[in-house]
Length: 167
Image (cartoon, rainbow, N blue to C red; front, side, top):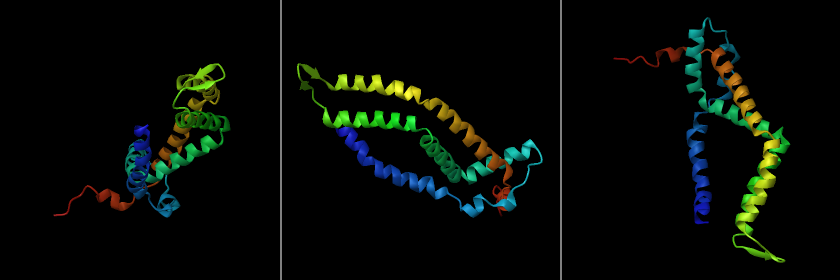
């Protein structure tokens, strides 16, 4: 139980670290949605150069887009949301309220039997909710949006001089 407590106590530090690393790389929305810099690449070489630059430059924004798509996918799949809440809530409740075996009538109910019941109900429910299809939808839609944005947004002129050193 102390391991769970250690993990729970480390969550605020992880959130702070995530905020410092990923959210600090967010670019302003005016720069991310700059319609004046949108143009069709002349060839695939230029498209790959744009994708390479823009995926590094807008990495925080792209992570936010993928997170928003993931939340949208969960919200639009209520069965999957119920299955996840059922399984996670079941684990939490079993750990909190049934750490020791208890007597119910003539039967002894152990933590192992409660986990077995949770899996017998939860795993078919999770299978029926089809998380694999949500995963592939998320991969496809985020790839389409991120690569489409990265390929069609021109890097600024200053990006051409990032590797040049002044003497």
